Amino acid sequence: MTLGPLEYLVIGFDRPDFTGAIAQEIEKVVEKRIIRLVDVVVAQKDAAGDVQIVEIDNVRDPRFASFAPLLQDRMGLLTEEDVITLAEGLPNDSAALMLLFEHRWAEKIKDAIIDAGGFLVARETVAPELLEAVNAELEAASA
Image (cartoon, rainbow, N blue to C red; front, top):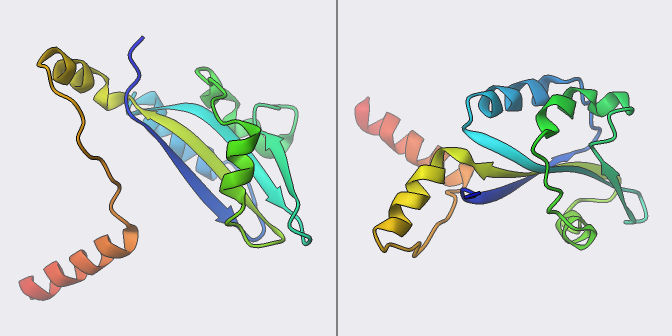
C-alpha cells in the first residue's frame, strides 16, 4: 500500500461546538478520494494547562458521531506524546481538533516520481497570512 504525503492540522477552539458541520465538509473531500483521514483526536486543555485526550473514534459520544463514517481508514498514527506536544501551543481552557490526513490525490504521482528515479527535495505549506497578502496585491494590480 502506497501512502501519499501526510499532513496534520491543529484547529483551536475557545468553546468547541461540534455540530457536525466540520465533519460534513471533510466528508466531501474524503468521498472524492482527495484525502484520507489517518487519525482524528481532540485535545482539551484545562485552566491549569493539563491536557486531556479525547479519542474521536468513541462514536458513543454524540459530539463526535458525525466523524464516525470518516474513520473507516483510521490508522491511529498520532501518539499520546504527539498530541500532548501539539497541544502545548494551545491557550489554557481551550480545545483542539487534530486531523492527520493523507493526500490521496498524490498517491499515483508519488509512484510515478519514484519509478522515474525522482525524490522529494522540499515541501512546505504556504501560510494563510501570506496568501491573503498575495491576494490583496493581485486585487490591487487588477484594479
